[in-house]
Length: 212
Image (tube, rainbow, N blue to C red; front, top):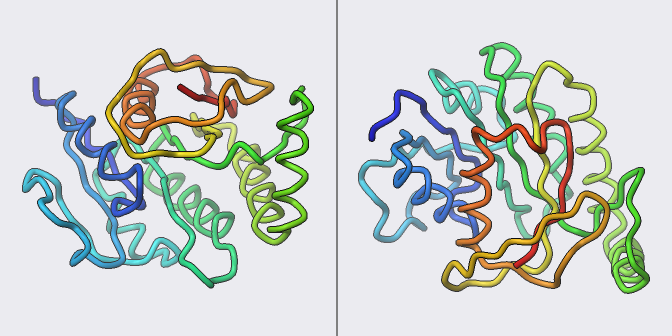
C-alpha cells in the first residue's frame, strides 16, 4: 500500500542507505535520497528521488527535507576529512525545526559511550581503543549525541551499531540500551530495524545498541 509519507535519507550510497531505501519502498513509503555523487548509484530503483548535494550544506538539506515527514541519517564520514557528524546533525535538526518534521533516526557506532551505559569489559576496552585511535571522531560523535539531547520537540532515535557486514537479512535482532549485545549486524538487518522504528515509539529520545 502506497503511503503519503516521504522519507528523506542522508547517505544513500553507503553500506546501509541503499538497503534502507529498498525497505522503505517495500513498506509503501516515498523516498528521497541526498547523495554527493549520483554516479555511484548503480541499478538504483527509479522510484527513488535522487538529489545531488552535500549533507553539510543547509540549503541542500532544505531542498531534501521539503515535503518530507521522516528523516533517516546514515551520513558516512568522507575519508581524510575532519569529523562532520555533529555539524550535519545540527543542520538537520535546524531544518527539521523549520519544516516542522518530528521523526528522526540516526546511526552511530557502538564505541559511543553515554551516561547510563553498563558495558561489559570487552566492550569497554573496544570503546577505549576507539577513543585512543580516533579521538577527534569519538569527540565529534559525543557532541552529536549531545546536540540531539537538546531537541525534546523532535522524536529522535540514535541507533548504535557493531561491525556492519554485507549479507542477507538474518533476523533475530538483539536490542539493549546499556551494552552492545553482539559483534556484528548485516546492512539488511539494520534497514529492517530502522524502517520498523519509523512508526515505533520504543526508543524515542534513546540510543539503543543493536546486533544480530
